[in-house]
Length: 224
Image (cartoon, rainbow, N blue to C red; front, side):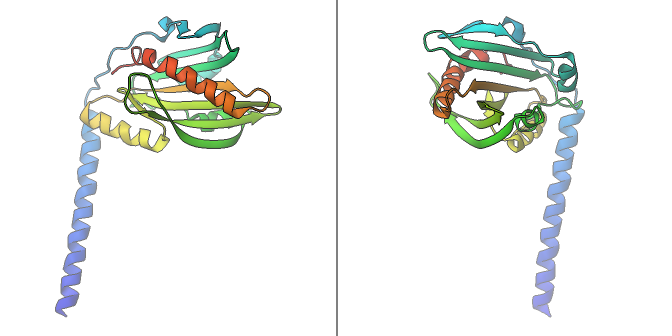
């Protein structure tokens, strides 16, 4: 009987700990999201350089109003860059959100691209080494096809100079940043390189090279 009572007591204590943890988490969430948010200043993406290393702007992207209305980003950049010496091409898309408290949030390319008719053929997280940075960033590599077209997509979420590949981790960091720093700003960064003659490795190499030229500059345009 004593053993049963001890077991029941231990279970009660465990339940109380779990309940306490839940209540503390709820209180932290309420506190983090109830304060007036500190929205950090940012530079307009329209001023983003047209030259990144050996890459130069070939074309300014045009985003339809219907898409912008759905996206609800506070600032957007859409461009096509080329590397004249090699003929490589990379499309850049950045959507910046000053706050996610009113329902504004990045749309995952894993949802948007299939909705545009692209079929995923591969998905993984890869590291990219950056000049002057000890640790590589980890980003999504996503291969999509539509008819005879195929592209390599590299994308990530960026907040406070943090690079996050996982959508789930991005949500967790959103809550932590709201609690600790009283801010929920973030950006979705997407780079697309077309696959030519079926050479996915070459397209991946082009996308990685472009990211390495892009990243040090991009940090100056997104809040730290």
